Image 1 (cartoon, rainbow, N blue to C red):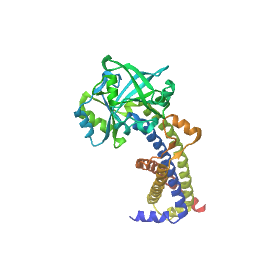
Image 2 (image 1 turned 90 degrees about the vertical axis):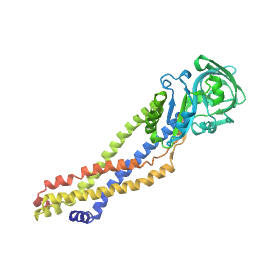
Image 3 (image 1 turned 180 degrees about the horizontal axis):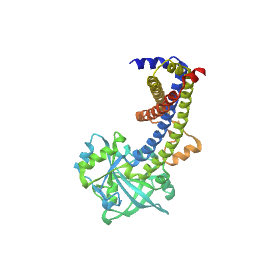
Image 4 (image 1 turned 135 degrees about the vertical axis):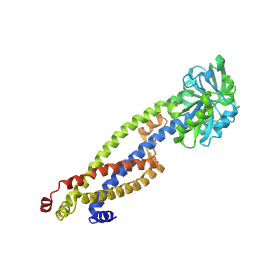
Length: 406
C-alpha cells in the first residue's frame, strides 16, 4: 500500500510530464480505435448489402443442392420443418425461395435470366423487391399472374410494364417449363450483374412454372443477431440431422469472405504502421520523463535507496499512467465512433457512383462494437508497458555521481 501511495504522489509531482505521457497514450488508443471502427463498419456494411439483402445469414437446403444447384436437388418443405425453424429463438424469419435459370425473351431479343420464385410477403424482409420498383407495382399475392424484371434486362429485351415476357427453361425432373407472363413492374438493383438478368415470380406461379409443387431450392433464414450464425448452424445441424444441409453465409458466399480477409490484411498493415508511430511517440515522452528524473534517481541511489524498491516504484508509476491513458483513450473514442455511426461519412461524385455499382450505399458507417475498444486499448496498453521497461534498464546502469553532476 505504501508503494501505491508513493507512486501516485510521484506521478503528480510533475503534472505536465505526467499529462504529456498520458496524452500520447490517449491519442494512440483514440487513433487505433477509430481506424478499427471504420474498417469494421465497412465489413459490416459489405455483409449487410450482400448477405442481409439476398443470401440471408444461413440457408437450409437439400444435401446435394450446394454442389449441384438444380431443381432435381430441391427441398420438400413440410410443416414440421417450418415449425422447427420458426420456433428457434435466434431465428428472426424464414423465407422460401425457388432459384433457377430460364431463357427470357421479348419480341425480338432473348437472354438467359435468373428466375426467382418468392413468397410475396416474407421476401420484403430480405431483398426488399417492393422498395426497388421504379415503374409498375409489386405483387398483390402469391397467386398474382405476372413478373417483375430488372431494369437492365427490360432495356435489353425492350420490354416494359404491360408487355409480355416469355420464359423457357427446364422444370423439376426434366419437365418442360415454358410460359408467357405480363410484366407488372421494373426493379433496379445496385449490383450491375443483378440488374441485367433478374426475374421475380410470385411463389405459386413459380411452382407451376417449374412443376415443383411444395418444393423450394432453399429456405433463407435471417437471425436476430448476425454474429450467431455459426452457433445456429451447429444447433440446426444437430436438430435436423443429415436429411438437410444447413449452410452459413460464409459457405454460401466464399468470395465475400475472401474479400474481407484480403482487406483486413491490408488494414492490419496500416494498423502496424500506426502502432509503430504511436509507439515511438510514447517512447519519446518516456525518454523525456526519464531524462528529467535523472538527478532525482541519482540522489535516491546515493542515499542508499535499494534499486529494487526504486524499480517497483517506477513500474507502479508507469502502470498508473498507462492505465489512465488507456481508459481515457477508450472514453474519448466512444463519442467519435457513435457520431460517425449516426452520421456516416458520405461520398459524392464519381466515388459515390463507383461504390453504388458494387451494390453498396455511398457512405461509411463506423462500427460501435465494444470489442474494438477493448482490443485496441489492450494492445496499446501492452505496447506502453513494454516501452515502460526503459526507465528500469536506465536505472540499473545509472551511476549516482554522474547523474547528480548533470
